Length: 248
Ligand code: NAP
Image (cartoon, helix red, strand yellow):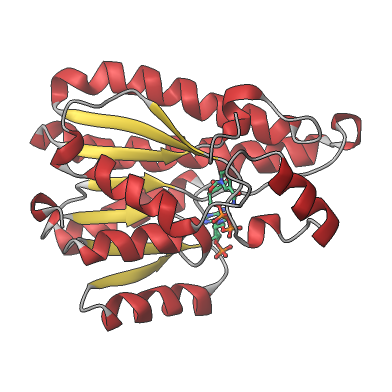
């Protein structure tokens, strides 16, 4: 239990399922009041809140497409008006596009950049203002190992995650003196809907490429997020932490 997290307010983008849901649930177990952001899956977001309430935690659901600057601005204004502050921002929303680079259109480029990278920019730029005023806060960006090393057939996705890694290192340095820590988690293959596109054969092939011979669980990423949000990681900033079972 990270006692310092008790009573903090966190915004977790893309918390209607997968890694985002696990992070929202994990933070709430430490007494964090969570804003469960989603884009289209309202039922999923409600399920996340239900799990949190079953664990005696609490929070709200907030629909917002993170790629749209104006709606993100409204979300952070609403949260500030109603709840006063944001202590923790987890930029988790993301989409993937698997295929050859030559088959990717300009539309694909715009879509993945706007959700995966501009979404991080949008949310961070509004969350960070009050953090700077209060001289405290933590930002956690969910990257990917493909942002560290690049992946064939996921060129655009890898590029967005590489951008997140540089953004994290730069912003962490810029905000160090303001008492705000900025880190990223770089997961390997985690068992979520994002990997539903793989056949059983592809899944077992993938597992063979992982030294731990298994996919990660969302909870295993969430526990690292809680550590990075807490004072237990008080001297860690501008870092990209890999959680991949030894894959890269
Ligand atoms: P997921 O199960 O597909 O969930 C994606 C989440 O992002 C959903 O909650 C979705 O909300 C939300 N989202 C998508 N577009 C959005 C938008 N425009 N605005 C707001 N929310 C949006 O994915 P996941 O596997 O949990 O992945 C979460 C993060 O981890 C992503 O950034 C991903 O790149 C990263 N990651 C995943 C893996 C993996 O193996 N799973 C590995 C490395 C990194 P709706 O359902 O409401 O649309």
